[in-house]
Each structure stands twice: as structure tokens, then as C-alpha cells.
Length: 501
Image 1 (cartoon, rainbow, N blue to C red):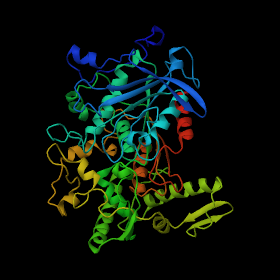
Image 2: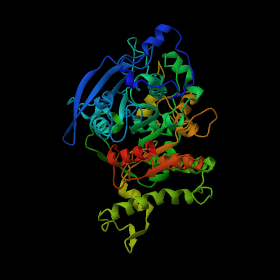
Image 3: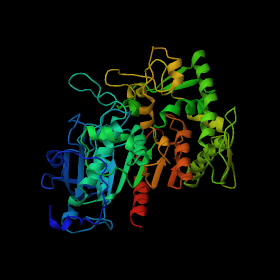
Image 4: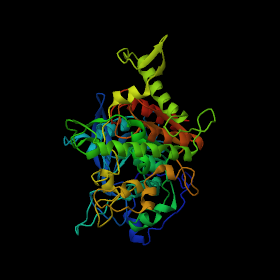
């Protein structure tokens, strides 16, 4: 690589967490600046020349040679001493979008749409378009692939069960930091991005930086000798906190006994969404819903979260309290923002207004307006039918339960997975944990029409982060369904504000 773009040794301090071992392993992880393809992307009518470094293995000992790859895209201007949007080769942030949907395996995203569908498999928008737009913004883009819940080796053993996906993304971060001095882009300014399960993984990267719980897995695949904390997190509708998501879902939807279930595919299934079917909960499902709802207050109260007024956020046995008020306040703020932008909400009788302001809304009526999508339990299905059951299997067993409630009430003789593995997949368990470097900046978006997981999941995550002193932006965009990358101008403005301080 041109000497002009080499970084000085003093720019980035790297703490060695694991050793790759042999010199041969280390050579496998060195970024080769001479192996690239020149590409052009068109953004808003303008042609942007880029260098594409594609299908790079980010680990020395890959378990899977298809998914443990990363694509790195760099504007050609940075090799010619030019700047874009005020960024240079040395100061450009690294945008780190994953393509994961439904905890399925995902290949790296590409800068040029190959015509085979949106964004390499990620839900809620065209990640390839996102990559092109990010490049035009002046960012270096590094899009990692990752193993998923269905990944198997030639012997038929499952190799992508939890926590494989987060281990892979951590290894990709380490690769970028390990090679920071030999490629454009500032690896101290990595901003992750993901939607749905990808949003959960984006959150998990940000919440678990450098924690030693993941070290044995990283050592096994030959991850680079570098740190894995990141600068900032962008998470759209994160399907996270899975061991408490069933409770949160029923706390929100209990009493809504009709549901419109997606007919396969879509964000949860990794394919194109099909027409939903409308059905009613059975008596047994209604009973389970009530049981799960009743369990949620104890969990919320045990978190000892505090509101902006300093008071503990609590729920009573009926599920009412100031935590519910907090969730409701985010919905009101969303409706107000929509109304201020010209959206006509007059047809929604459950919204009360006065003098151009929303004064109140009937939260129960709003939930009925949302509609239920999933049957209880929404995530740890009693018959082991959910994507998350498959996520928490192991090398020999495809599906397992991951909550004590579902295992005790199993309809499929399901066994309980190792609960330490469940912890590895929950960012809530690492925020405030010793030996962990948490991202300083967080942007979380969950649409008010998104019923893939409960609103409380993102509210709890954001509130815990705020309580620990981190910079958090949480919004529930009005009437947005389960999706992501729908407000890229605002996302990029947020990134620029952080990186140009």
C-alpha cells in the first residue's frame, strides 16, 4: 500500500487479548492492499470510484469458509490524497453493517447490487444500497459475514449455534483493528449496524467489548491479536434479551387473542415475506400468555432501572406502573413527531390531542391497533418450532429450550440449553460487568408497528445504558413495521456528529 496511507504506530494502542500462535497464522490475517477490484457505484446520480477487497477471511482457522469472510470497500479518493465529507484516509470512520436476519447465516454485504435480492439476505432494506450510500458519505465500509443457526459442516455437525454469530463478528472487528495501520479508515471509530437479529448482534458487539467470556471461542478460530470493542452502535428493532422476551411480549399483548402470523419468510425466516394468516389463540395459549405476563414485573423490578426523574421504574403485579408509563411515553413522542411532520392522526380515536399536542393515548387500544403477530411463548416455543430454539441448539442437537418456563412446559420433550450460552447472547447481562468495554454511543430504533418483539425490550436496553452513563438515542418511528435502514440520512448525520467532534 502507498506509504502515504500507512498509519503511525502511535495512532492506535492495541491491547493483545489472544495470540494467533504461529507466524503462519499471523500472516493469514494481514491485510493485502494489492488484491482488490476497482468498482463504481452510482449514488444520487454521481459515480463514486471504490476499491473492493472482497471475500477476505477474517480468522486464521475458519470453521466455515463461506460465511467467515469480510468485504472491505474504500473510496478511491483516499488513495489519491483527497477527502470526502471532511474525512481523510486516516480519519474516515469504519461503517460495519452485518447482514444477519433471523439468526440465519449471512454472507458479507456488497457495494454493487447483484440482482439476487436485497442486501445479501439482511431484513428490512437493501444493505447493498446502504453500503453505497455510506461510501458516498466518506466512510470506509467493512461488511462481515457470520455463521448462523442452520450452518453445518461436511460431517453434518452444527457449527453456527449460539454464540457463533457474535464470535464471528467480534473476530471481524479484531481483524480490522489488527490491520488498522495498513488500510485507510480509523479502527477506533467502528460503527456497527444491523436489523432484527442483526440489530441484536450489533447491540451485543457494543455491550461485550473485550470480555473474556468469548476468548476461548475466538482463540479456537484463530482471531487476530487485537481488541474487539467498538465506538458506536446502530441497532434497528433488535431481537435481543431472548431469555426474557417471552415475558415482555405477553406483558404487551396479553388480552389480544387474535393474531396475524407471517406465512413464512420475511425477517424472521430470512426470505421474502408472505401473506399473513389470521387466527385465534387457543385456550392453552391464552393461559400461557397470562402466566408469562405475570412473570415480567419481577424481572423489570429486579433490574432496578431509573427514569430521568431518578425514581425506580417498577411494575405492580398487574403489570402497571411507571415503567409502563415510560414505554407509553416513547409511543406518544413518536406520534407527536409524526403529527409535527404532517401525518394525519385524526382517525385514531385512542389518541387525544389539544392545541397541536398529543396529550394522552390509550395504550391498550394502541396495542390492539398494532396487532399481535406471535403466539405464546413467542420465542422459546413449547414445541421447539421457533428460530430461537434452533439458535440455542448445539453441534448434535438442532433445537433446545432456553428458558426454564418453556422447558418445564415443553410439548416436544425439549431439553434446556447451557444457560451460560444464553448469557453470551444477551447484552443486558454485560452492561456494567467488570472487564467489559462498552460502546459509548448508541442509536436504537424500533417502529411502533413492529410486533416481532415487545417494545419493552429496546426500552429496557436503552434505559440500562442511560443509567450507566452512556450516550443513547432511542426512538420508536411512527407506524414503521419490522425493518431497518429507513432513515439513513439521520443515521449518517448522527455518525458525523460523533466522529467530527
